[in-house]
Length: 154
Length: 185
Image (cartoon, rainbow over all chains, first blue to last red):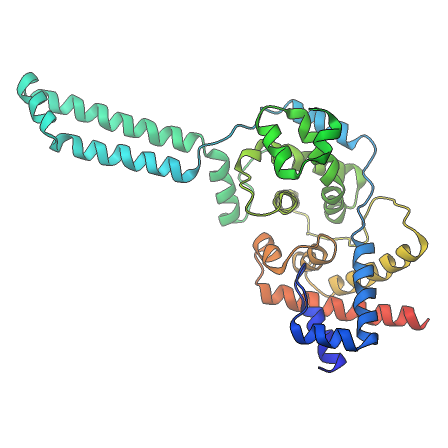
């Protein structure tokens, strides 16, 4: 491998990736390229040296954090959707169950409508709680998709 | 848990403590990452006070959304994504052009050799960034300073990986020239 080829490949290398086999072989033979790779690594390390923090910034941030409601572990989206589907399927299947016929016989056909309403109400309440507890994600999604801020500062 | 012990924990372990109710453990994350967030703020706002407000805003947002951190990326990358979106949104709200200042940083006192290398790198980065529209220019800073991978930069900024690669390649060529010149001088 020529030095120019090595340096071009080296310049395209992703962060944290090791050079390929041929590049490493070249590096072991070519002192000039080895010196350059070391110099570039030192330059990047110097450039990335952490900037000193502003005095008092940590205290200021923590004071604001203490006034913020505690983050809570959330139920994963997959679990939310899973339980929602379970409720929806159950709602659809309950009228087909034998027990439902037994309830109809016992209380008469007029019982079916209120029961269906209650089941629909449970599903609606679940969807409402789901949307309500995912407002932040919804706003972030809209921000990403629409490309502007939908949140407002107080 | 004592401060000494919290300092030894990884970011993910500290997050576990915070989610478990130990709000004060969050200060460890602030201590570790405030420099990077502040620098991004300085790049965007070019004003120390505004950058400090920005850093506060970013950390409060991160704290609020901490439960949604799933560890699929590093915490620093996740935090930087919040910072990037916050900065872009703040700029758009104020209808400012997104201008970046790659030289922007808080006063430091690196050693002489380190300072020289840092200066040459900053010049190369600045020169490469000057040739690009501001939002694309940030890709170079995200690679050079924040040490992010092409895919992470792409995910954060929305630019194709190949575009980012070619910008970084150009910047590295400029850096090579600068380091070569510096060596000869």
